[in-house]
Every structure is written in C-alpha cells, then in structure tokens.
Image: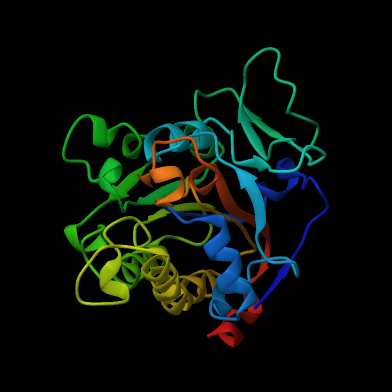
Length: 283
C-alpha cells in the first residue's frame, strides 16, 4: 500500500466530498516507542500509512482518554511538537475567534465533528476499546453516543490479548455490510497498548516499554484485516492515525498517564490519502 501525502494542510472541504474516513486512535501509544518500532521495520503495515520520515511527533490535548477524545471530536487533534509546525486544523466545530481554522478546514456548525460528518451524509461507526467506550455507564456512553452505531465487547478491551484481531475483524465485517454509495467514517479506539499489556511479551507483569512495543506489533500484524475491508469498498480513503496520550514507565517516578511528563504528552501522529488499490500488497 502507498500513502499519498496531501499538501499541508490538506483541503478537507474537498476530501470529505469524495473520501471515506478511517480514524484510528492507538490508545496510550508513546511516540518514542512508535518511532523506534518504525525505524526497526517491525511495524510494516502501519509504516505504509506514514510519510518517509515515519511518525510525526505531536502534543496531545489531553493526558488521558476522555479529555483527549472530547478534544479530538471537537476538531482539536494533536498539535505539532515544534514551534514552527502548522497548527491549522483538519476539521472543527464552529466557534467564534478560532485562530487555527483556515480555508482548508472543514468547519461544522454541529457541536462535534462526528455529528457534523453525519449531517454531511456520512455513516459514523465506532469500534470501542478502553473503558470510556464500553457503554456500560452514562460516562462511558458520552463519546459513543455521538455515532450512528457504536460497538464494544469484552474481547475488544484491554484485558484480551487478541483484541487487535477481534476489533479489526468486527470492523471489517461491518464495513463490508455497509452500502458503498454512502461515505463512511470508521473510528476505532485500539486498546492493546493500554495497560495491562505485559501478556504481549511475557506470562506475568509488570508492563514495561518492551511489552508496550510488543502490543504495537500485535496491532500492526492484524491491520491488513481492516485495510482490505476498505479496499473492497472501492472508495478513496483518507486516514488519521494517532495516539490520544502516552504512558509513563517510571519517568520522574510516574507510572501510567493523567500526569504531565513528556512520555504522556508526546504522541505519534499521521494523516494522508490512502491508495486503496494496493492495500493487498501491504499484507
């Protein structure tokens, strides 16, 4: 598969007129781990979605899943980590005084991007992963209720070592069942990198950088299931692939996230136009 890198910033007003949208959030994935695995060639399928330099380092708007996704769905994706980086947004919920919207930004009058896409004719599909998407409490339905349909099962969640395959197989099935004449926004919160992840590297804990990287490789190995489902739709595809926050493994004494350390704030990011006609080659 080849990812074509659109001009910076891409004109989302034009892209959303013709393209499906695949939005992958690799929950808890650290930038340094993602980039190291890319450089070592151990995530070839994710690499097919990246520019030649690999992942872009960005800063997340939230230090844990809930605020990060609330910001994402309002149009505030991770911002470039370098001061000179372009901060124009791909899409935005309309509000007065925004300094990061441009003529390329798709601006919605609705309160969130998902509702805006739905009103533009998209079918919006959510495949949940971590607890904020499990729909078992009012809080864990806040994000999922934005979508036309949302799905979560225990075997999509953080305690299941087979969650990458389970999530992508379920998503592929729903993608294949949906009519191709209606554009699709498929959002997946990928849970594997979130703790616990020790079982991707060994039989017992604790989690560490080694198991975190092993979890990412497990996701990469199953990614062709999802990409081939989009290939069969025969529609052009735009992807956003990023983390919502990182995870600390002892930095400054911290373990986990919801803390202000670079291991949490620095996240990997990529977007681009995907050439779906060559996705089988990536498998």
